[in-house]
Length: 234
Image (cartoon, rainbow, N blue to C red):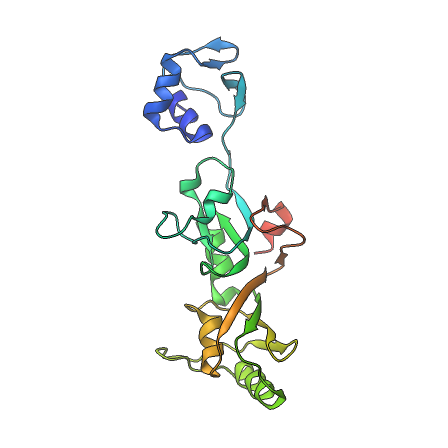
C-alpha cells in the first residue's frame, strides 16, 4: 500500500495532510525517515511510526457493538445531531455501515460493520434474527387491553400506510406502562407505529438485543468489537 494512503487510513488524515507530515520528516518506516508518499509499505510486517507512535490499519472487516445513547443520529453525516460513529475510535469510519438504525431518542444495541453481506444477514427478515425492545408507554393499559394487544401482535397487524401485516411478534407486559416487544423484522418506526395502532404512544424505547448479541453491561456510549464466534452466528 502507498505510504500516503496507509497514513490516511491509519490516522484519518487526508491524503494532502499525510503528504505534509511526510515532507516534514515526521514519519519513519522500519526506523528510517521516509518523505516519499509513493513508497509502498507492507501493512502487516513493516513498522510505520508517526512522531514515535506506531500506526496500523485494519486488515479485515470490522464488527462493532455500540450501546447507543440518546441524542445521536444513525447517519454517516451529521444533520441536526451528532452521529453515532463519533462515539467509535477506529480508523476509516467512512467505510462503516449500520445494521438496523435507531431513532435519535432511542437507546440500545447497534451493530456496525464494513461487511455488507454480514449486515444484510443481520437485518434481513428471512434470516429471523430477533430484536428485543423495552418500551415505556404514555398511557396505562389495563389487563383487557394488554391481552388484546398481545393477541393481535402475535397474529400480525396492518399498520397505517402498509400493504402487508407485520410478521407475528411477541409482546409481553411488565406492568401497565412497560412492555417488551420481540420482532424479527424492521419496518420504519415499527415499534412506535405498532403501539400507535393500539392508541398509545411510546415515550421511551431501548433495544436490548439483536439476535444473540446483548449489551451485557456495556455502558451508554461505549462500544466493543464482536468476537469471531459472535460474528459467525449471523
